[in-house]
Image (cartoon, rainbow, N blue to C red; front, side, top):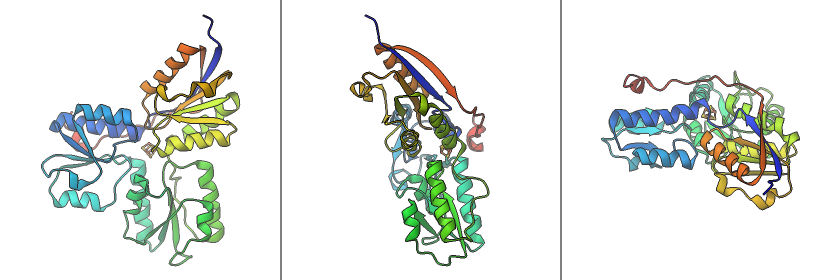
Length: 316
Ligand code: SF4
């Protein structure tokens, strides 16, 4: 049987970032050092495949610290945690390892510095996302106010419009965030911004790669989890760049083949918490149905690496 021709444009960079890589390594090393079970507060990264794999090795995922026993190690996820969480672990004399991405910690430190200078923080982020909860929880209640959209800026109530700084979630849409920042600067001209962009290199690079493949493709598939902020933003970026069909899929089984009927070029990318094995699974699924040519579209090379905490480095 002759298969119909199809070109897959593979975005690069895609998939795992340095923060996710480090968080997974931390859980694996903790299991080596202390044995199972090791408790992990919140999904270590937003990907079911990764979480299931670590669970099979002996990690126990919980939502709150109360669910962990005092005598087993606990790991805090890459998204970061409110200050109250490590404090509670310390009060219980637990072994706690922080897998917060260093780029999220950078935002936490920024917030603390501005607050020490007497500034109230405006956080641009998504309500309820663990990273937003963790970052807002670095300061006492009321010291950080949240905006999600440009429209929110108009209704924002602040303590003193001349004493404000803004920070952002690391995984937002670069373009949407620029609009919100412009609205904040228009309403509060004295507002102080981050020294260096809060949206991380991995989010920025993955969005740029999607923009580069968008003009070549009829459809975009983003491999990622429905609760992964950076993956959802990639779908939005694809649509905004002119790709009418842009879908999030967790695995090959989620692909809606009927929606792809008659098309000749598909873009593939993956969120920062999606492993490459799932990208390969999707490519194989295309190969089974199409005479597939894969073209890599590389817009940046990433060399960032983060060290694991010393307590685990010494154990290896
Ligand atoms: S997406 Fe960015 S901030 Fe989040 S873990 Fe990866 S590098 Fe860190």
